[in-house]
Amino acid sequence: MTAALLSLRGVSVGFGGVKVLDGIDLDVRPGEIRGLIGPNGAGKTTLLNVVCGIHGPSQGDVLLEGRSIVGLKPSRIAALGLGRTFQTSQLFRGMTVLENLMSGLHRRTRAGLIAASLNLASYREEEARAEEEARLALEFIGMADFADRPGTALSFGQQRVIEIARTLIGDPKVVLLDEPAVGLSMNRLAEFDRLLRRIRDEKGVTLILIEHVIRLVMDVCDQVTVLSSGRRIADGPPDQVRNDPDVIEAYLGKELRARHTAS
Ligand SMILES: Nc1ncnc2c1ncn2[C@@H]1O[C@H](COP(=O)(O)OP(=O)(O)O)[C@@H](O)[C@H]1O
Ligand SMILES: [Mg+2]
Image (cartoon, rainbow, N blue to C red; front, side, top):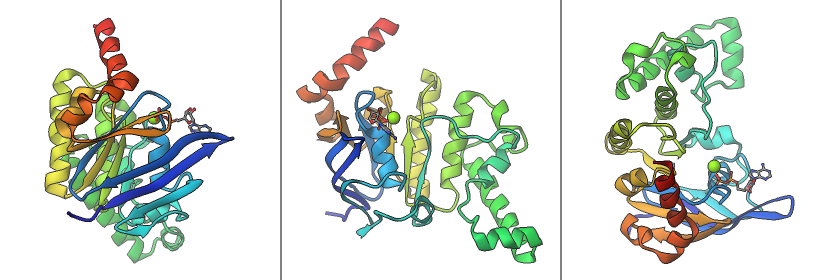
């Protein structure tokens, strides 16, 4: 068995006495696309926040390549190879698509800021490299022509894909995606499925995907973890999870009924 790239060991998180995550274990192997599903409020986003260092766990450990990353700053964890997108759109107003992508680079160190204010040659070189990487990321997602447009002029779906491109700059090992497919049409979903696979296959990035679009999760994910009320209620290949009575009871039954009522 391959060693896990990212592991959670008994991770608990409490907010004001309420346990939002309760003893979560998780092992994500390199090259895996892992789905993370469950009802609203289950603790999915909190789990991502713990992994990327926004919240510390009250108990348990998070390991990246076997090394604990608990207590490290988010910027340090990002530099170790962890990228993420957020549940709500994070493109900056007043910036072009290209500038938005460049703003995702984790090189804005103190030394970098001083060099920038002095406009040192080293800084200019770094900027040029950053621009090159940003252009390559745009090319990868098939949006090279959008480089100079204002970020917020793009459609919602396009903005979400730009946010994913931003995480790819700097060669991350793991990328965490928080509901990236919200608002995508069925046509777009097939494209999105291909994009996720290409990120894994061509960039070698391991993905963790929080998503309510069950069809996407079941199609693209190798393994699916289900959270409900802060606990892990199932973990396994899509087919196993889809037919798990506890998962149907806690989540899938409701999702499917909601879809029927909506259509
Ligand atoms: N910073 C916070 N402070 C207090 N409660 C929070 C905070 N973040 C999330 N929660 C609560 O934790 C629970 C899980 O939230 P979340 O992780 O966002 O769930 P999900 O992403 O699965 O919908 C919810 O009850 C939410 O209200
Ligand atoms: Mg969430």
